[in-house]
Image (tube, rainbow, N blue to C red; front, side):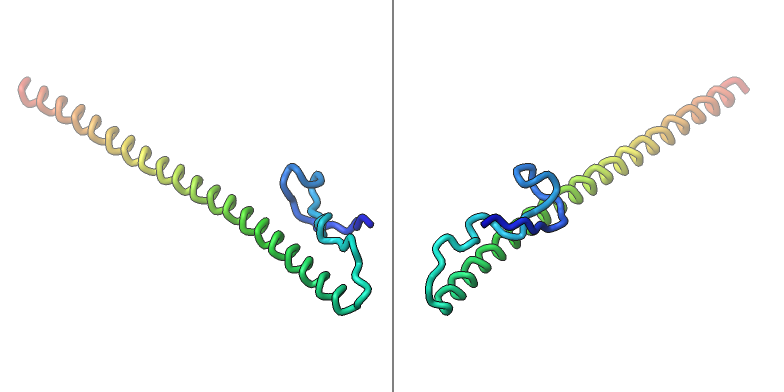
Length: 109
């Protein structure tokens, strides 16, 4: 009894190409209890397991997203630092060049 319904969100490489399944294979009842109460209790238990797995997948993807954002922020901060160091060095070299020209101009006068 394979269910064909799928979620429209990108999953792991082990999942189907770009769809997540709504139900896990183990969340379908293999042995159906005769009592309706037991059957509903078992379905609720399996639905809770599915929900926990979905939350875990969302948590893992959120961790990956936060890691990517943190890495991008670190790299942009590093780029800003190098920009300031480069600009400061360029200013220092220009001031030194101007100072040398002024000193040579003063010494020649």
